[in-house]
Structure formats: C-alpha cells, structure tokens
Length: 338
Ligand code: BDR
Ligand code: CA
Image 1: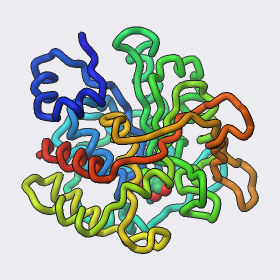
Image 2: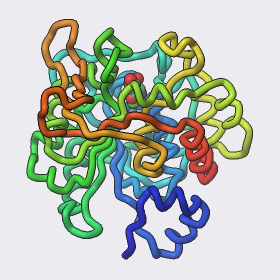
Image 3: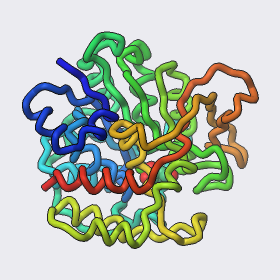
Image 4: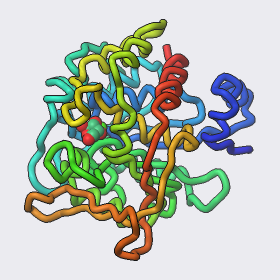
C-alpha cells in the first residue's frame, strides 16, 4: 500500500487526501500521543484526530499541567467529543524523581481553562507505559516497509521514559519521536527551563538517549504559533462541537507576558503539525541534553545549535514555523470533526 507523506497530504489539499484515504489507497501514519491536557494539548488532540493523514492508535496521559485525575478526564472528554474510538490510558501521576507541580495559572484548575466538557468514554484498562510498549510491539520494526510507530510527547516525558527504560529493544520500532519540550533560550517555568522538560528532566534524558530520530518543538518554535484574539475569533466562526470547544478553550488562556501580551503560544499542536505539514517548518540537526542537576538550571535543555561541541546530532530542532499556514491547517483539520 502506498504511504503518502504529510507534505504530500498538504500539497494535495486535505479534501482530496481524505477521499484517497477513504478509498483505501493511502495508509495514514500510525502515531501514539502522550499528553497532559492542558489547553494546548486539547488543540493538539483535535488537530491530530481531525486529520486523516494520522492514524492515532492510542492517547496516553500523565499528570502535568494539572493532576492526573483532571488530565485523564480531559483526554477522555476531548476524544469523546471527536466521536473516535481511540483508547485513552492513564499513566504517571508524578515524575520519576521529585514531586509533582501543576501549571494552573495558564490552564486553570481543571486544565482546560474551566471549560466544562461532557464526560467521555471510560479509560481503557492498563497503564500508559504498558500501552506504549504494546503499541510499539504491534507496529513492528521501523526499518520494515509500512511498519513502525511515531510517538508524540506533549507533556512531561515520564510515560515515554518508563516504556523505553523497561523494554529498550522496542526502540527499534519507533519511526520518530516528536516532542514539545525544552527551550534553547530562556524558559517559561524557571529562567532556564520549559515546563515539560522541567517537570521530569530524568525522563527526558532517557528519551533523548534512545538513539532514534527525535524532533524537538521548543519554546522558541511554539512562540511563533501565536494564538491572537483575531485567530481565536476566526476559529469561533463556524459550525461543529469540536470547533466551539477548541475556540472556547483557546479563549481562556491568558496572553503571555514574555510575548508582550500579543497572544499565547499554541505549543503542543506544533508537534502534530510537523507530521502533517513539514514544509511549513525550517529545521536543523543538533545535539541536545537536559540538565538533571538540582540547581537553578534543572530542566534546562542545552541545545547546541551551532555544533560548537562537534558532537553527533541526536535531534532535529524545529527552527521556524509559518504561523498563517499552521492556523489554516488547524482550522481545516478541526472542520472535519463533529
Ligand atoms: C508545555 O507545557 C505545558 O504547559 C503545555 O501543555 C505544553 O506542553 C509548554 O511549555
Ligand atoms: Ca502539554
């Protein structure tokens, strides 16, 4: 079966791509999303579930932006709104080391800005790390045609790290890991660290060391996907329960001081957009590590953008995104949801 890339899907136009997928001529890319919804995780889930170029095999959940009881409920509710029968599985409620800290200033007490969504289907049985390993096993070795699984991590990396650390051989079945994590300049939770990296640096270190293709959407990238009042208004304008939920959730997020209050970054959906429309990004290969010390640098990602250390690259750093094409892709994909 022909596998058509996200680039082709974008160039083709989503509608023709959908018709081709429905006709059975094209295989969607299998992915698993590990998340902590989270206002921006919600938008990322809608983008992925609304676009037929992606075959979302499972959604695994960690505590992050808010506690696991909220993030799990939110993930179930968001997947439920899309009407898709995709398993949602609970994972870690705390980092590998240290204690759990939430980010309610951005995401509200319930994680989706206080927006009240109808309850979704129950969580699938089991634990996230087991589900990740099972999905990898089912996907087969990534060097075989049509096999392999792409892992998208848009929360603390705990679940992904637990899966990789407990069965390292399954890394061979990973086609790519796309992470919203880190910052090559200043952070958003400490001066040095971005929230996901800071929430579980040891887990991120395990993932960065897995020797599979890794793509990083850092703060510098996601700050370019600025969700302005005009962009929220554009999304509000149209039919669909998911569109209304997306716009309502976006509207709750306070504008970011770091970005002169012009809007807020749509962090997590950038990781999904990379898989759908790589042509709207620029990127470079880098060597990246994370600071796991207990000082002020904890959680900082040290990203060698200019190869100063002459170390072999272990990640692809997304440098720029075309924000207008990103928000167009988002609107077009969400329009395919109920
Ligand atoms: C990341 O941290 C969380 O607050 C967001 O959901 C995103 O994944 C941004 O730093
Ligand atoms: Ca997130």
